[in-house]
Length: 328
Ligand code: CP
Ligand code: NVA
Image (cartoon, rainbow, N blue to C red; front, side):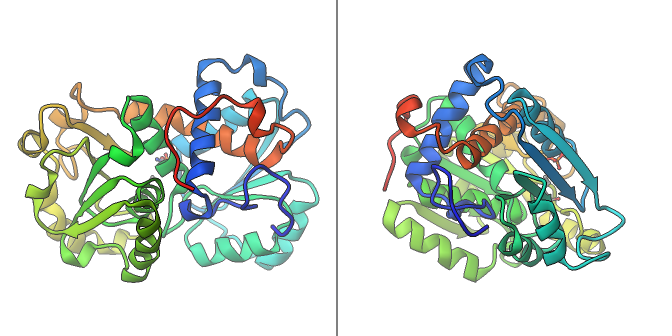
């Protein structure tokens, strides 16, 4: 999209670093207010339309966007692209130009982040990344919001990622790098996030004071506020299943690893999970697990984002003061 008309500097959300720390903190404030009571926001997106294009399966993202937008009074159209890739029937640009004439906001789950960027460049309405091969920004924003609402200040957070350095991992790195906490990324060396993506996050971290450390040493979970893992084989990577499973089996999150982290360490997962693979059932089904809080918060943070993108008249003074410190 080209002409910003929202409280955010960015017109699209393709990755977390499209947002500043202040903007993320403002989104947390709106999400918190929505979660407490949707009634003041009923009808705030009346006559607005969300179109969703999904090339991959989804439960949480689809339902939380659809029901969330409906709660704010808007209408939703879902287009299933699992068997017909975006850009297959007509160019990505023609598709974006068409949808921009009807929709107010577009959410896309796609195989290629490059395609998402092309679509957003051609769209004249905001485009939200609902998961690409490289990023899952809505997930990471919901996750940090979940930790913040549990009482952890973002700049004091220590998040330990264990497993594959995938799209969710990279979005969390960008979120922590922006907000100023600490993230320890524990993966086999071959599963680390790409070096160029880490360099971009490092530039953010330099400004915020965040510390992002990559290691293959599981002992680095010690003292973490939360251990986060995700499937070893992401959607679209099925041909690498055997290779990745072999590399990642030592990185399964089990009760022993949780004990090494600490008695208060929470367990996080974006879901869907594979019990017995990346996480033991005894961990994901334990009281330390906050996975369903994360899932619930997807809806609140996405609604906050869509309000921020579409309702520039909901100015910062109309919103509650953020309860967490922000870096500029
Ligand atoms: N966490 C997440 O994005 O779940 P879905 O793939 O079910 O949308
Ligand atoms: N890394 C996973 C996340 C699913 C929500 C995937 O891309 O399949």
